[in-house]
Image (cartoon, rainbow, N blue to C red; front, top):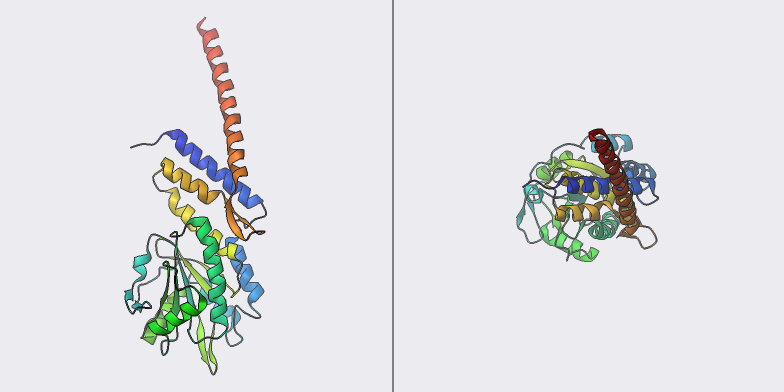
Length: 297
């Protein structure tokens, strides 16, 4: 069934107004998602994003080269020892965080900051709008039980859309790490590794890398909104999808409350635009009718 042209026009008008307001406003511009990710890497290179045992430039180049690459499937286990496949997550964005369960500082900090960003993102794109997996890359010791303990200690074990995975085969971990553009190296105290969150789009491709153990949450949220928006553009237009798009496009970050909220000023602006457009169309139609009347007289 074809939908009215006015609904299509309305949808794209909402998109223009809302994205225009966000880009030119002061709250977390969508266009800043990629630049902010790079900025986070630059800000954290000396202390948190990259360890001293890893060549900074080589690690960043290796990580960035993975963008656009399809994520392969690997044999992984969840906290209950059940097999998990990445193909199970197709259709929605997926966040991947590589950690090791015996880490006493960096990995817990990364996970805690990620938990804050995830909570913020849920308010913007919905509770089930995306999934998260934390994967233990220490194949010797990271097992379902240790990953379960790690999740419980971080306070995220109850999130139904966040799984903690592991693999018993070191080859699988190495292949997955290479696929993700993730570098880690063994040291006498544990591991030195890139502090990286990999964002996978709904088609299973690496969409963006976000760096730093204490990255700016809106960088992640805007990236997720960007993916969801991109996937929804080609979908069938209906009133329900129009409402969902309006919710996605017109949610902005409020730094005072550290939450995403619906910006009703955008809706008001849209209403004013419709009124002006209606008046303009009315005037044009009236003039056209008068011209036709005079020409037929």
